[in-house]
Structure formats: structure tokens, C-alpha cells
Image 1: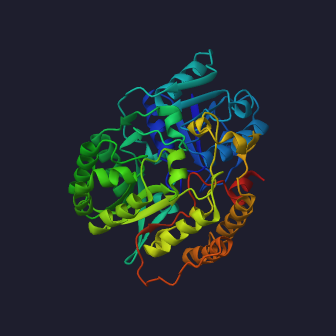
Image 2: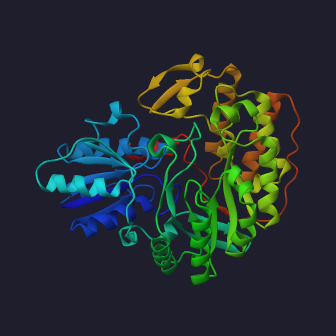
Image 3: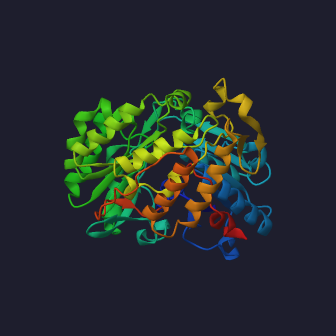
Length: 456
């Protein structure tokens, strides 16, 4: 069987979620080709000789764009089998299953994807939804299927740019933050990729030119001893490359002793989903940290010489102008403007099918229906001016996505300050270039008009 694996968006990285299943399908004896629509153009010739298409949907934006890709494929070859696979494959089933996709594969998708292709080859095609989070052994991803690393996001540093590779040492998460899509699939569990597999993948990324590696685990310190072992093993083999990781505030503080070791191993920044500084919103999201602990986390990693790059969820049904202003003030007060993508000040709570946030008791009065096209429940803020503010900020973030991010962030901050009738000092700028990735968008942001227009 000739299988075409399609990626539409993977946070500006060379898509691991094509390379990983590609290796499994090749090992099973299938011919695999790949298309990354984030950096490659669609042509009808890509379907020539293809027996099946599988589209990677690891996040909300990818699913939105993946549907557009599947619709285009259906127009050109209506009979071709299509599967969606990844974390978001089960979202919006009424919109996808039976129309743009024959098979939806969630969780640890490799075995089910190989089985689906096998069922097609046997003439007994599997349909419907598959969810599997079982343990398995992972092969070295088939990176040769993909465009070169220099076509993807890079790391900007004071010494210039570094090419970036992306790996995952684990999948899933031991926590159940209510706004996060991961608990809906993994339910508080995580799966280890394996130190040998990660090292083998980094070896081929370095050979391809990577000078920096992103560990994209939902929480790198879900298994702290294993995580430190992995990154120190990679550092020993490749002492010249740097890293970034993602860690909850709670884990930053609980494992504060590991940060000097991670710094010595080459970690230059850590992404942490602070989301909000409002106690009520943090409780509704089940974040298990406070605003004071978020402040402390910045200091803990900073003391080790590592930058903290917080991510935010400013707009929820319970957001106030003052709450958004607190977030903006936090960014400038801690001199984080140079490492904060402007889109972070505009992100609005997404509520897909199965989201744990639907269990929050005081959410229902704010819900206004289900939008099949947007793949989620719609809602209005308790303060209607917040919806208008979010739309304005989102437009500013998209318009400024190719310009100076710090200037855009300052302009957005001034709009926020005016709405909250407060003063926020945006003068705390330095000439330092701090390590940050060049990709300006984020997994929980709505896709841009440019992204959505890829098949126009």
C-alpha cells in the first residue's frame, strides 16, 4: 500500500507526527510519502499512485486545517480512504466521520494506523473511532520523509540563529487541567518514548543541522528522573546543542533542585502554562498553582540561568479587564516581553467535544451553542466588553505576526490598559536578545486567515 501522510501544522516544527508513524508503516512493509502543507504547496499530483491518506491532527489548529485538506482531497479523489490521527482526531466527529474521514485514531496511534492500512490492503477496511493509550516500543522516526530542517522554525539568540529539531520523550500527562485536550484522551496517564529512541532521533536531527532541540512533551517532568536522564544523555553525546522544555508551575517548584542540572545540560528556556493570575479562573481550570507560585517559578528557573516563557489563557467566560491587565503587567514586570509571542495576549478558551471544562458548574450560563465549523462550543463572557477586546487583540496579533513582536505586544498592552483603566509600564525593554523560537503562533490559538486560506 502507498500511504500519504499529511501534516498541516505542528507549531512550526518539522512534523514528528508524520516521521514517527512513517517509520512504523515502512517497517510494516508499506510505501510511505509525506506532505507538510505548513511549508509545501498542494498539487493534485501528490495523490498519484496513493492508496490511502492519513492526516496528522495533534492540535486544534491542525484539525481545522486538516479538514480543509481532506475536503480538497475528497474533491479530487472521492474514493480514497482518509484517516485522521492524533490527539484531536476524536474531536468534532459529527463534522468529520463519514464525510471527510473514514477512520479516526486517537492516543497512541501507531499500531491502529498500521492496522487500518492493513485492513485496507486486506479489503476489509476498518471504520469509526479508535482510542488506544497502551504501552509500546517506539522506532526512530523516519525523518527522511520530510522537508529539511532549515525550512522550519529556528532559535533566535544573541549569537545568531540555530536550526531547531523537535522530539518527544513522553506522551500524555499525569494531570487533568480542565481546559487541556490531553486529559480527555490520556485521563491522567503518560507514556514513555524511551531514552534510546530519543537519542537516536536527536542523532539524526543533529546530522541534519539542528543546533537546538525542543522537547515537546506536554510536561517534561511528569517522570523527572527519566527526563533528566534523557536530556543529560543527549547532552553528553552532543554538548554543543541547546534545549527547551515544557513544565507545569507546580513541577517547577516541586523539582526545583533539577534546574541547575538542566541548565548544565543545555536547557535555555522552559515553557510553562501559567494561563491566568486570577484565583477563581485558576481553580476552574484545575491548574493547581497560584499567582504567587507563578511569580516564584520565574525566579526559580531564572536563578539557574534559564528563562521562563509563560503561556496564557487571558480570555475565559469569567475574565475581567483587570485580569487581562494583570497578565500584561506580569509580562512587563518580569521583563518577559522579548520572549512572549503577542498571540498569547489574545487566546480565547477553546471548548471542544469532551473537554473537562464542561464539568465546571458555572460555565453553562455562558454557553451559546456548538459550532461545528469551529469544532467547539461557543460562549460569551460575563462581561460583554471582553469579547470585543479579545477580537481586537486577536486582530492585532495576526496583523503583527510578521513584524516586531515586542512592539506589537506593547501596542496590545496599551489597549488592555485602556480597557482596564490602569497604567502598565512598557518601558522595561533591554537590548538583550534572549533565546526564543521564531514560530509566532500557538497550539491553542485559532488558525489565522492565511492558514485557513491554504486551499482557497
